[in-house]
Length: 107
Image (tube, rainbow, N blue to C red):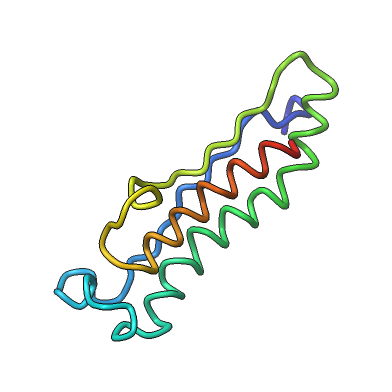
């Protein structure tokens, strides 16, 4: 901010889902309810999108004013590529991967 540019942003937030330490974390999705969905998407995925919304204008401005290409890092997991833990977790990580790819097209 002191230099009038934004060179990089990183989204790496994660909310610990309910029942992380017991077998219910790996239970069938219909037994987990919306609590698990909200825990897996409400912080990480939503936070990454909110970061991009607020940072994009400054990232674009930096790219236009300098020779630098700003860096956006959205931390995901292998769970976005293959089944890991539960349905809500995997969908959230796959969505984060997709968000990164789609945002890259526009940025």
